[in-house]
Length: 139
Image (cartoon, rainbow, N blue to C red; front, side, top):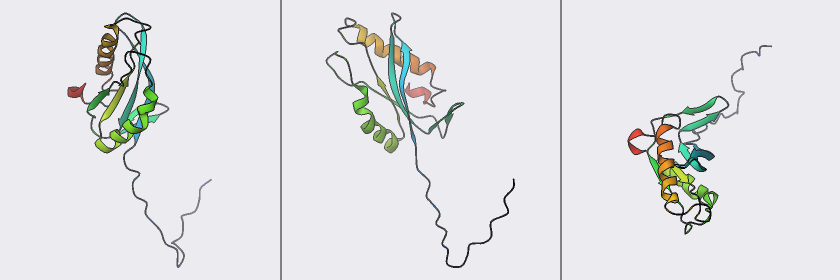
């Protein structure tokens, strides 16, 4: 079925143009990455200029510099979700991507496993930089 062309606006009708929605920050929660000793860990990624579609991510704009955020927890289990709103606002305001990395708590793995987890997360992000539109020189 085809629709007829729309007639001109009737007298008195106002057409308001909307502004662009601005930047969108994609939230990618619980992205797994393998640790050095084979255990699984995860990170959350906030990326401006990335649209998530059923066919996968579609980048919009130039690659984004990356900031890695590691919430302190005295090596106990972390709560990454608590920081999402604040870091999403940061990502939107600056255009930076933010990775929030979870490490295994000391009750699960003894130090320096936590530092090894962070290194593994960075290595994983380097391998995925094109997929998530991350600037190569910042990962």
